[in-house]
Amino acid sequence: MRDILRWAVYVAPKMNSALARFGADWLGWDAQAGRARKGLEVAGLPAPRETLTEPPRRYGFHGTLKPPFVLAEGREPAALDAEITALAREFAPFDLPLAVGTLGDFLALVPARPVPELDHLARACVTWLDAFRAPPSPSEIARRRPDRLTESQRAHLETWGYPFVLSDFRFHLTLTGPLPEAERAATARALAPLIDEALARSCRVEDICLFGEDLNGNFHLLKRFPLAGAA
Image 1: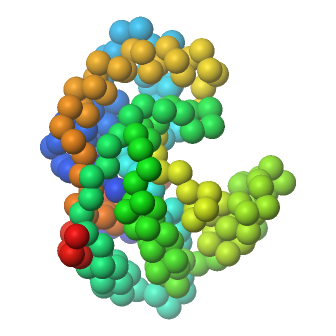
Image 2: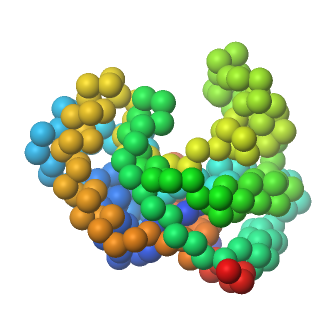
């Protein structure tokens, strides 16, 4: 296994699916294949695609369940693997309808309706696997700008190492970095035909994915864990 700086548990579209191809081509990084992509040429964008997608590119196309973390001292990747396997056995596959939306000032694919199964799965990933997370460093805490967080977000940051979990969780697959409103709208219009094609078939979450950050800062898909619980 390659050297891993940080680990994370994500939802990622099935390899070679229309959604996975779109995400990798749009961002320019295929985390599942572990290589850069030439990228899409999209007419009508308000800025070069490489500029719009620079912030999320290295993470790959994904939806976060357990945010990136450094492995705690004394914890081994094999034990993390076993724990994720056990967790995945407790949850059944479920449908996940997606639509274009905004989260703060960036563009993303978000659930088109409430999906309680997704919220339950994310909560389990955050809490169940937390013994494997090393505490964040003071610089990591400062980078989250705790003075700008709500009370609950600051509590999550202190307890779980990340502010946007549990009651503040909003699932999303990031499409851009921060953009002014007009640029977000223009990007959404330009991407609409491609996204409609990518979402033409219903999305279904059938597994959760362990990702790892390499020494260059790029995230790779390491393993898929099938959701094996009863519906």
